[in-house]
Image 1 (tube, rainbow, N blue to C red):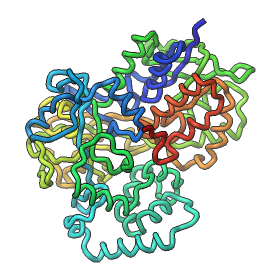
Image 2: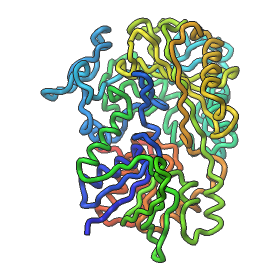
Image 3: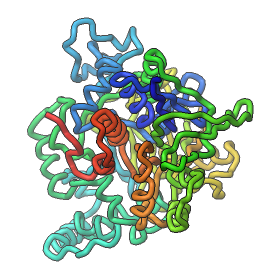
Image 4: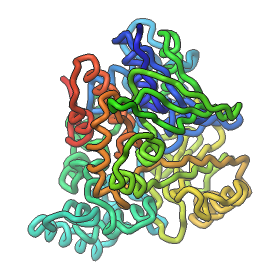
Length: 524
């Protein structure tokens, strides 16, 4: 009889696993998604024709395998987008005959230029920081001298061992630069100071970035005009080009879900996994699932279980002889949650004073990190610059205002109207908008967006080693591994799991090794 894989979650990891199984094996994937949406936190929300990307998803990877995978699902544009044409902007284009024109076809990946900045002291700074005259002028000579002295001190006498994320940042940037541009923002994201967060977070997110690499990259950018999408050897934080689906990241995963179905697999929405039942031989064969549309509870059996659900929930729902220490550690895992306010405006008060031209004088940023301590706002996305096709009327400005919170805290539980009003007040306070220019707004809540590197995370190996004992249970993805993976890392964990199944490999070590080194399984 054909084997069945029960896959929990229809985000990038779960759908990648389903696609790889359907394409490469005789295993039939059944994807169970608790919500009504495809894509997990990589979904696209359509609000009256204006599309939101929750968190911002650059389609960039050092892995050739992932880059090819994306372009196999959605082909690279063969003609410029309308804003590329308007600005006479040179972008990488596909040389494949018949490559799609984004003006006439939706199934297309755009090549986009990345611009990110920091808002601090009501002034804009390049991200990563550069040594441009504007940076020196904004910071002042006295602070620049303290930054240089702090960086020199950190290089000559680094903190050993690194016991916290604060130690990690100070060792790479010096105390003054850390205190100026990292400390308050990171505490805003996580709700706790950097001194209480594991340094492993820095290894996951910042990797090899340092002052030296940022300066070197800045000089390279001045001397060359590299428009290649293959940016091997470039730190992820420094990339200048990335791919992006015309209609947002959810378009990629909706396309993948359709392909899974066309190959005989299933993707069931509104199916929340409540329990995982293990047999006496330590195999998880039965999932108890609730259909939120009918409130009906059913049992589904399979030969394999691939989970992207939060580890805390998985262990809480596991019906097996789970040691009390494993339940304690899993129950103590912490998550940070996310609220995005979509704000549609007729104009911005800040003008585009950069050398990067944009249509209708929209500022050029894909996103802006808000370091200001007097507002709760964490980050601003300018959706016009991710893809001009995310915006129903390109003469308007479509922003995503990002807030970090904890599910069911005071901010999370505020009415949508109050959250939107608070966001508008903060943007007006920052001098970016006038409330009179607001045309529309929407509030989107996303729980368990960020698995946290505090709580009981230091004892996570206890949970990992226990769950690895189940021979047919595979943990992949950001929440499935309780690891702050990028989208491509989550996909690689899924690909590696399928590789192991095909090869008959029992060890999970190569799955857990995904995103532990700078090249993370780079090919070529």
